[in-house]
Length: 531
Image (cartoon, rainbow, N blue to C red):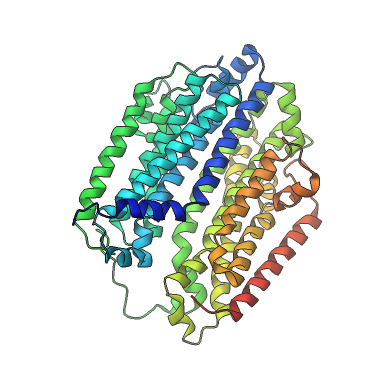
């Protein structure tokens, strides 16, 4: 039997499983890119206005580290796609990792690939199918993003280069995910390896781009994220740089195939460590077990939020020079503050971090479903542990973890802003801006728990709610949607601190809403079958 036998059948199966995930992700990316381009056309209509904001951005190392450089200050496309080229590429990379791991290691861990492999399916079929789907998804994303940018009024050549740069980053990290899936037997660990690699790539790009004149610029050329930006879309396109992503992906794909041939189905190249014969005193409760299972992810998220908060805090004091356009000043001030522009900037950025922190809560709460589908919860419930006690332990970790990551962001941003301004009181003000996001982020955890209790197969819909709330907040005002529709997002009701007045009412009812969703979810879990 051929090692690739059954590949196209697995491709069709993977496409069916991703029939919601892939279109939603692609639509979000395309809409965000097109809207960003259209908004920039109105905000910076003249070459002088674009050059001024680009020069200010390039002169701020923390901004360059976060988003990259603007290679052509006079170019409308280069200014419009500046942030999307940086943060958007990170999200595209995450999509590539998720797809590769989802259709390889996750299938093995769940036992489904072993059942499929008992039929006429070759050893390399699952890996090949996952890579085919990942490449097709990223190419579709690149093509549609380019079409969206052209429709928004940007030059065709630059739009195609930008779309292909995104596709190149996504395909590169799909290959990273494929290799990570061979190393460990856990899908979560494989995803963690992929995301850690992405973090290293981002750090290399950030250090290289922000170290102009210090001899470290070459570090950007060691990063797939850096390659995507060095294509220089809308700034004299360098098409040959795309070949670096192709070579990187091909090399890692070859490595993944070699590793697949040297391991058994269901196992990883790195063997699992055997644990002690008996649990430590601190590990004899459901909460301790939940903490042990989720602490690694929480530490990683907290460290990332601390660093990101510090970068944003260091930018805030100089934000006035970046937002010279009066229309931009007015828009940001309306979004986030009433006193100073730096407060408005911090409030807006804390709102974005609130969305990201909600993603941690969704991920942590979905561990309930993962433990159930892998049949690890049944032995626990067969003992003295009750259903509610077991589920509540993971829910508590999700809620507390969401709070911790936002505290980390607030402390990082507040400390950096305090250093920039020489005012220690900024730490508390910025921390308050992060903490008010907590009740809104908790609502997403409550939605996941509710679905887990009554329709466990729909628990992953928490991601769809998160994306929907984000789009309402970002695009709702632009499309002038009715306020009743905008109010569906919990983040719309959060006070915009620092800079605005603190209103406790919305925070209380958001907390009460979360408690109600969790209570209903637990009641449903008590009455349904496990599995």
